[in-house]
Image (cartoon, rainbow, N blue to C red; front, top):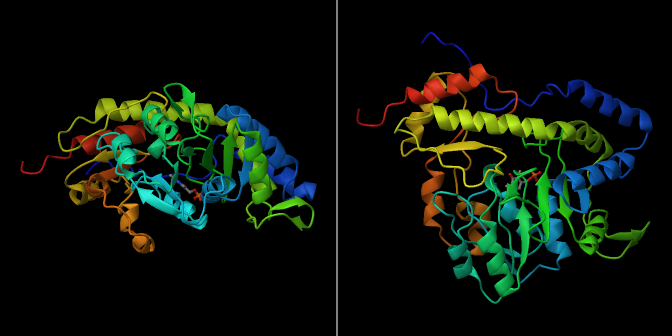
Length: 368
Ligand SMILES: *Cc1c(COP(=O)(O)O)cnc(C)c1O
């Protein structure tokens, strides 16, 4: 092979933001104030503005963002929350951390987000909320999901951990349901240099309750009104996120450009490239599908292209879920055997993208 290019799956070191990130870190180090201070407060208002919501509350992780929304809605033991089998397992684990039971409804075979008909079939008298995931940066099928929720009087909690700045038919994620849960894990579209998360919401009372829950349930200092969590976005991460947030629109544009190049360039019958369902897609990941994934992954590796699988196991098949008697989801079972994520991040160069397309194009369908 003449082309020895190596395309890594992800590049987390700061790029055009490096100076701004270092300045932000220095500012916090010198400030002597590290938890719940001016950086978190400023980030919360800047992030809310970016989300198109009235409020944002910084928390420790994206998982905690989901758990605290569930708790703030007084959903807990005995209650059910409907969620998809194809996601980071944290979506369902967050429901369990709140004491409620995740109930799985299968995914749409093309869109790969919650199938509204399956959701309707999974509703029981104990169902309290839907937890759609805006997977891979693409909004869930919100119009029918919101209609189902309204008809059955259910809350809608949006898992937007992979979907910063994503819209669904023009509506920003986090504004359609009661709240959106965001993660700032380093690989996410907006990442910190450590863990972080936020809840974005238009509901002032919910934001206030989550501010209480993230801080031990305190109403005033040393008065713990309820058994809250200890889950705060720290000043250092908030300052880093403030340095990066203004760059997020340009980074998102770059992801969309790369996705368009992949779509135009990858034309082998050996690979299925799912169509774009909504141009509000922010391309956190770019999964393709193939019935011969092991061979395809080995082929990309041989061409110097790193790929990963999101996700290899449907959440209901995880050992941690066994005791909850999860529903079987045959579509997710099949999709988990077929998905393969190609490199997708803003600093991917045009030459990297061309190398991925060339490697994909050299993949022969099985039987040739
Ligand atoms: C990353 C992620 C989470 C969890 O976020 P953390 O910040 O890692 O806790 C939840 N849901 C989805 C869909 C994710 O991708």
